[in-house]
Length: 164
Image 1 (tube, rainbow, N blue to C red):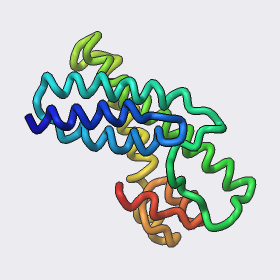
Image 2 (image 1 turned 60 degrees about the horizontal axis):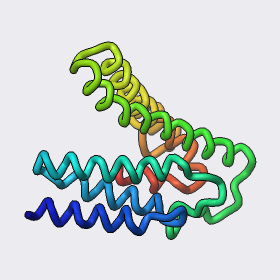
Image 3 (image 1 turned 30 degrees about the vertical axis):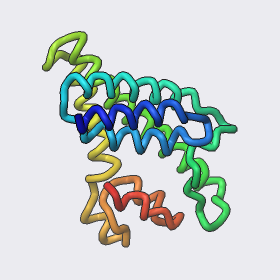
């Protein structure tokens, strides 16, 4: 019964979805989906989350996406703007790996080449973005390992990595 109420919450999120809140909706929906344990309700929740993801993929330049977007306290230099664009693109690629690994395992088999490809892609992105060069980064004054911190910390946006 507890999971059913979470499914109702997901339906409400889907019903209130707009181009001005899709980012916030994705965060809430993903959090709710992660605590559902009943397999049947989990499958229905996945369908709702897939609909929300499909809506999010259509995001365009004029969409607000988050009710309170993260805004740096200064105007980004051209190089920093390009770094942010590259970070977003890279995270979209990582998200693609996460979305496709499950699909590949359903349509092929557990340890197939497509599944291994996406799993290796996930490992590659996670290692390079968040894990590698810890000692070198520390020597250079960065508070976290990985490559993302090298772009985010100079912009004062290192706090974005704290939840990770």
